[in-house]
Image (cartoon, rainbow, N blue to C red; front, top):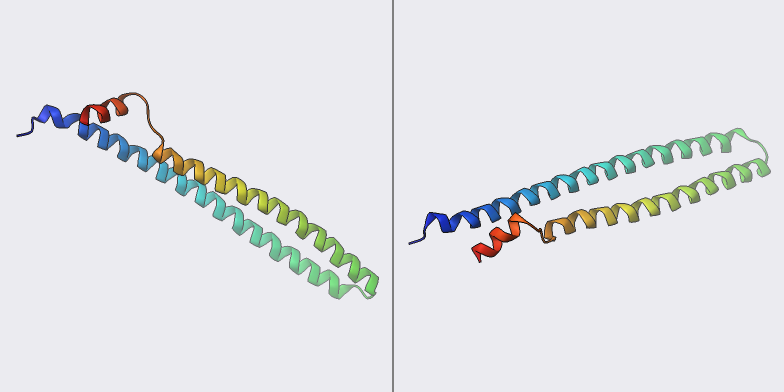
Length: 118
């Protein structure tokens, strides 16, 4: 028969791991929400820029002005794509770091409880 005092370190270790998992899940969800907001803002910006190009393209009469409008739009798109790529890489790195925190070995009381349980 198991003594109740023997099971306490196991319960503490499980509780500690559960708390850590909840914190990691919360941080992960917050980062995903932040990323979604960023991408929705980017969609709005791209939509606005496309309508602006459409308006400029149809309001100018000469081919040279149309080409200038397209070149300006292309420069903006290229710059925004570079920023988007950087943001995507940084977000992926952040999400990976958050996820790794779940598997990181804790020091202190939780490890001692886990070692005692083993």
